[in-house]
Amino acid sequence: MGKNRQTTPENGPVSVPEDNDEEMTVTLDLEDGTTVTCSIVTILSVRDRDYIVLLPLDENGENQDGNVWFYGYSENENDPNEEPVLSYIEDDEEYEMVSDAFDEYLDGVEFDELVEEEE
Image 1 (tube, rainbow, N blue to C red):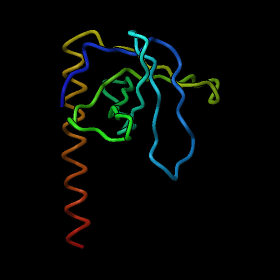
Image 2 (cartoon, rainbow, N blue to C red):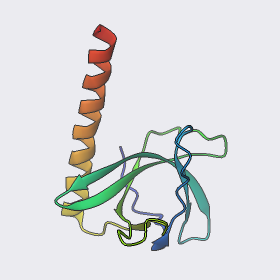
Image 3 (cartoon, helix red, strand yellow):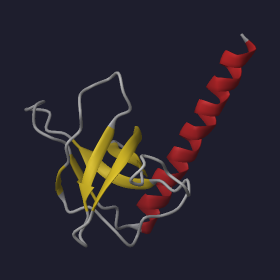
Image 4 (cartoon, rainbow, N blue to C red):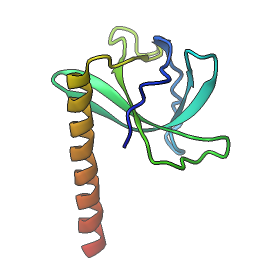
């Protein structure tokens, strides 16, 4: 898992499709003028704040390096139709907390998969 410190999304709304039947993706407009489609891995809550974990995809819809990107995530509770907003995590300590929470999430997913296979 790598840190995304070179390219960051512009602070602002991000379109999140509502189709639950297929893989959820978002398209980010990066500061360098490029766009990248990312698969949504999960949304984590750490210390009363939400973070989104994204897996950047290439033009074939695949990820070759396994790196994920972490961003702050917020929704307008008063307007559920308003698009969520992503924000760059600038503090290294905060980034490490999110990274650790994601590692715990992955451990839980692996454990759940093992339990399902044994049943």
